[in-house]
Length: 480
Image 1 (cartoon, rainbow, N blue to C red):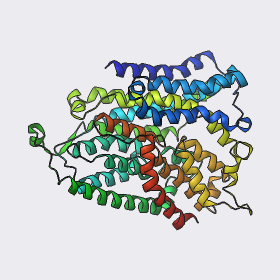
Image 2: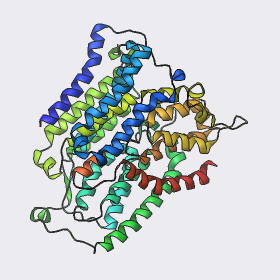
Image 3: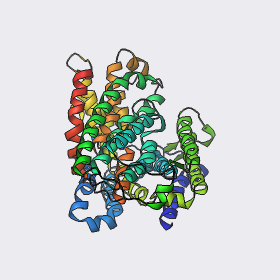
Image 4: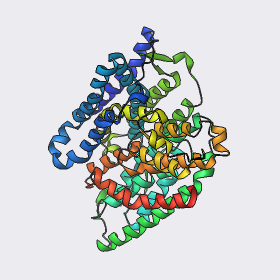
């Protein structure tokens, strides 16, 4: 419970900063870090943070387990301190506050709400992890992801999947494919599915445009991955001797059903809160702190999300969460690590936003041929590969703007280009643990329940071995 209170206090303080700014008037200028001036050397702290996440759990597991939060913050400071020395304290403070108020706080509040609410839904009865059942769970999650978000679908179904397979010897592949499908590819049909598509919606892309133009691509990827998973799970299930879970008196008498059903309504409330924040302006709550604008509807949304999480805790029995193997450790791990990640990635995003004027101009030039025509295959791969390690939402916006930034034009004559950008940002978030918000969370929950998940590089071996060939096929079918 002390861990829960520490997280709630941290969220309350973070949300309280804009209120203090509102009271003090704010109104400062915005001293952005000049992305066009930055060399790739500024990205070293972010690269080192990724290497720490990849290597230290293997080489120094005990030290990492107790100090990963401090290590993440240290790499964030490895950028902020030089930034303050070179560009001034005001610029460093602005970039930090922008990363926290504009990106980290909305990210962690939404994740906290979904984690809390979905953790209160328990599938009662015995669900045995056979290949058919496991494939069914993945298929249902893939469908749900576009309508309740990849994070919501992942948090709702990961525990039932883990419980169904608790008696199995081979479980890693189930979680890996769950990340592929439910936490990423499944969220590609509506703006509710994944943050990049929601940003596209705010920029004028029609709500059902992605469903129309990504359905076939998403369907092909999903069917191929489900087929590969079913074949692999069948082979491993037979290799294990088709195991049957040991009888447990309490669960044997329990009928199949749902406990904590009220949380399904609360999940709907979360989706409604997120969607309405992009459609309704609450200008009287607009505020500024150190030049960072916080729009009123976004602040109100985050307050509502925390209230929904509080309602879930109030209305869900402790016994239900206990039987659901619920704990606060996974959300705390993500909250600590992503403070450092959001700060350390600031220069990488700034360079990328500088476009043809930045240190990554060579990459930007690759998306246009000698005749000035878009190279859709490169839009797909560059958007995707950068989204694999950076925040996929700003990466989507960078390439959306590189392609012209006019939603009507992109949905019309350049529909293939917009489809390539959208598919790259959503699909390739599955390439690494930090490619999309729920990936790391799913990994943490699985490890907490005894699944020996691959290391950072180990997961890359899975994703590059399985996903990259399928992405190449997708490129040949649709983007060449």
